[in-house]
Image (tube, rainbow, N blue to C red):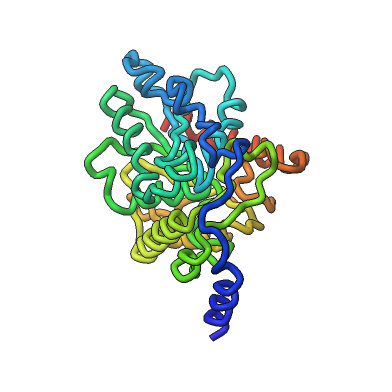
Length: 313
């Protein structure tokens, strides 16, 4: 009953409002600031930068870094900056389908569209002869990776070596996402309070169609975790989760820990991080400078990821 009253109250308030946002040129939504990977894919994708690897290059680790819902490749820029001139592993920053362009393109994309560029890069690297491929996801990027693991995608492909999940979302922190089916057509979209620096890299407006897609993929993955997910042979999975996160409920880490097993039936690794930031590895563009603890958390996570990538089994 309370939920019905809430729906009715919000409907009354918003019925007369426009269902299309008033987009300004300074927002990513406007199409003025396409993600740079669209223009210069060779700076982001290993498959484009080095399509003909030597035998030695083909054996070196490549990690495919995948951003979250409403974000862009910017979310993993700091990992690339941290890695600097290292040559013992490479980073492919994938732009999710429908992202990094404009509001209408974002609005029209399904979660399977979001996933497709991940598949494209993985299969391109596989065709080119790369044999040591891993994944690093943040937020919804993690959800999409989990879905690929659960639906058997890798049965017909080379197996990933490592999967790193930073603040994965399986249980949303904002419980109103469950109401998007009822409220979405009335509201049309929601807004996010980005900082000025974030506006070029994160969508300010979130169409209800995309929120429905987000809810759908989260529900799919939650059910798959309840049924149990087994990792491909030789693949490890590590979760890095903020202890206080208003976007991805920390219970998400518990569900992944309970629902995923190694190919031998063992447990995965979960690291709870003393942070209140969502995607705590991304500090650039926030409205307050990262604290010493924030920087330590970021660097520790990057160091642990890199160590796992280059470790000889």
